[in-house]
Image (cartoon, rainbow, N blue to C red; front, top):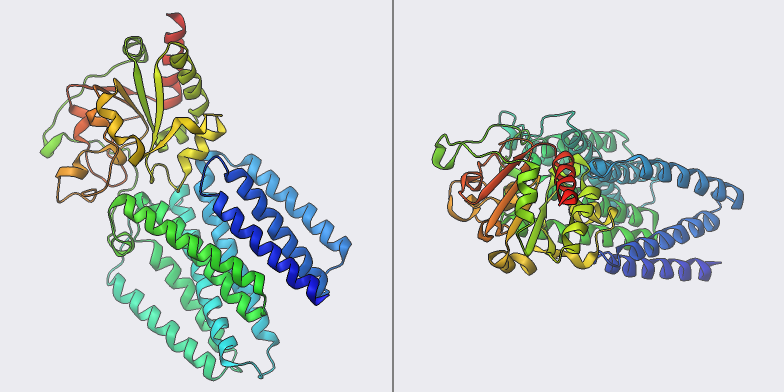
Length: 460
């Protein structure tokens, strides 16, 4: 039986690695998920059988019930709520690690080695931080809490004290593992730290926070794997932790900011509904256009690059947008989608959103691959995006966006914004492109505006 267990764990680990590799491309992501799901199912079933925790009947019942819950949640969650769901899942992973580590601690008989006691401390601390931090991220994304940074008096000193307290309690737990007070104090301190760690981070930085908390959930799982002496849990947790850290760094690079600045810079506003002034604080007006005006422009162009943003997700406009692109392509117009790495509220948000509307993967271009094309493009159509196309990132040194790589939409011959208002983005920086002579501002719900544009195109 031991050989079957080890071989199954090896096979599951290989499937995890293959799945992770396939997740690196939108074209193969579905297959990657299937590989990882099969690997996880294999690992769970073998663990339950070998340990004697559950028999075949209980395993089947558990998988059916869990599958039904997961299927119902997946079907009911809108794409706009996907970041919140990911945040919650990160939290679930964290609390699972905490509960398993604590239950193992309660079973200890005093003969445990120091490395096991250390990994218990790590699992309790990281798992609990992941839970409460993820709950705060969920609350900010869901609108339960303000999306703007919330900085308490002496905030960083408080965080430092909490970290020192966690280290002290952790050392005491390793030295005197028989005292049940230390693990409880570790959990309490970690729960508070998870809250104070995330509340000063603004809404614009939530993609980074989600990636980082995902990494934390993996690290907690890996630590728990050492507590349980379970190789597949160690490997799976390490893969999640490493990939989450890599993704976190990629997100920081996409914003040209350090992780330290993201975590402690307190950048961001409550939302994107505030009024926006013109460049250098000047009060300027813009010319408002209608869907019919936009359709008239589209009738005369040869190329269009579409830049989707969170406003597209909020309006659930991806299906009607795809219908519009089909009409344009039928007229011989070249249509492409430009995807900024931090567009939306989580990594890959726009890719998944457009895939849901059956937009071909070949039509989606990453920022570095398409930025040079804007200068030869007739229309750059921005739908619900702001910070990722704000030229202030190039020139305004006191802006929180300064140095962030952006999509070069201002190089296009005509720039067309579809927005609900003149509001600034999550970074709180006014966009001077709104007031450019070649910019068309079409105000309204993205779905209603694009539907009107489709209707006007069909009339021609």
